[in-house]
Image 1 (cartoon, rainbow, N blue to C red):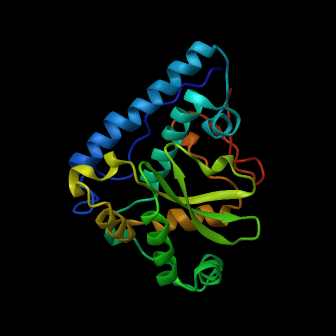
Image 2 (image 1 turned 30 degrees about the horizontal axis):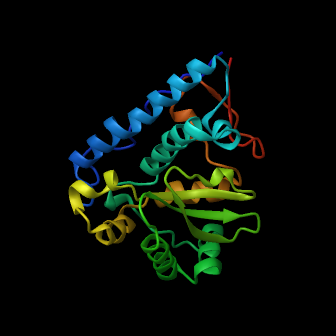
Length: 228
């Protein structure tokens, strides 16, 4: 069966992130940019005439225009699910495994936020900041340019991302990107981030874009959907 990706439903209402991100920005970002990347990915795959599998596999195995569009489809889905209403953005404070990793990697939540801002401030042009974890359970923030996705990196798993393309913030903040970077911290979906950390496998965003896919949930299988 040839995979056809669909625009995933947002995990919250379009105005849920106000005043940090306006409903206008969400609509423009989601319906124009995100939808466009998914449609372009489908068009490329249709021309190829073969089943390339889930987005995670495409990102890891392809380059050029297919990689760029597939990665952007994945990146945007990951970005949306990594955000939530500020009232639901509850920082971990239970002393559990995730908390311990934050303390070991950053010296605590404040150090974590400082590291994020430092990495974000160094991004030139369009790109993303990613919270990642390596095989030794050490977390760090890294940046990628354009559509870059850390699924291409060996022994690195993404846990969360912040979109730093202009369409993510320009309608609300104009050229003041540091204000956007400061504001996003109060809207992080920590439940999502922690679940990605505890899973010990790469996050599966394809499941939100292929309705009816049977999802392989066994660790070590790269969370890849199985298609009939």
